[in-house]
Length: 335
Ligand code: PBG
Image (tube, rainbow, N blue to C red; front, side):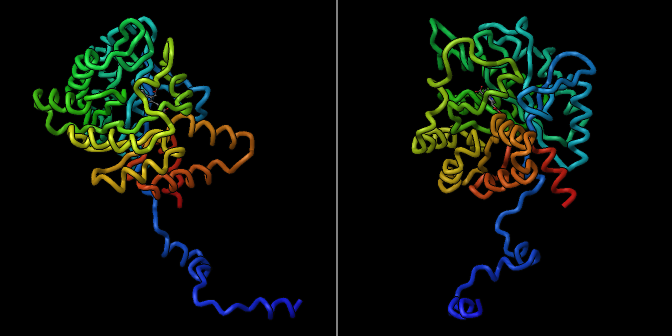
């Protein structure tokens, strides 16, 4: 045994383990740190009062009626969260081919935006600019003869973005992955006097299997077909540069990659090539996977959560939209 030890005595100049030998040193040399200010928490709102209904495929995530949504925001603000991305769950009766409910100022979504901004003026509210939660076809654009049409949808999106800005939105997020969105919405917002409303472009959003639980949360799955004529092919990363370039040129304030974990290379690619803040959307399916495994006792959910968020930031995301935001804020606070 002692023989073995002597033989193994290497003459090494570099011993990277020296920088890992204690918690204090590891902490000192840590390259990436998660902060509560990195996170945006997506929230689901539904009609009614006193309602808090859990999304079955997203344990711990609820759809809230506006009254309870405000309580949830208050809890999150106490944990240091400042920014929320809001999505509406609408009954079928409010949906139509042209998503007209999306710009009804008395509709659920715009009332919710206004309620949050009235009660928490310093909170940043990000709204979603896409037709799917309001569309009877479950698609992000207008459907004509079985096709999702690009340009005719712009008018709806312009109305929607403008109505959201009027309701108090600080950031609008065009999420339909169709062409010319950012430039058109920028023009509409500016013409309406909303120069300060920012645009977070869903620049590289992939046609992903990881959106399943979100579509459950909103009952917004496409009624026919899929979203492959507008969302990107998961096989492509160079195409993400084209999308990002267009959004940059059209005036985006943030470029987003979505999903996050299976697309860390794309996050890095955009971070390397663009000087705008890069956002990553750690989507519903990514949340559900960790929750499901943790519930089965198959992995340590808290550690898997923090490690995933760290990986997204390390890859180059400055902003992370994540359903884990509240839980991660709790972990960071107690650390
Ligand atoms: C569509 C939209 C989607 C998500 C946010 N906005 C998915 C879709 O294409 O159906 C998904 C977010 C998630 O899965 O967490 N406008």
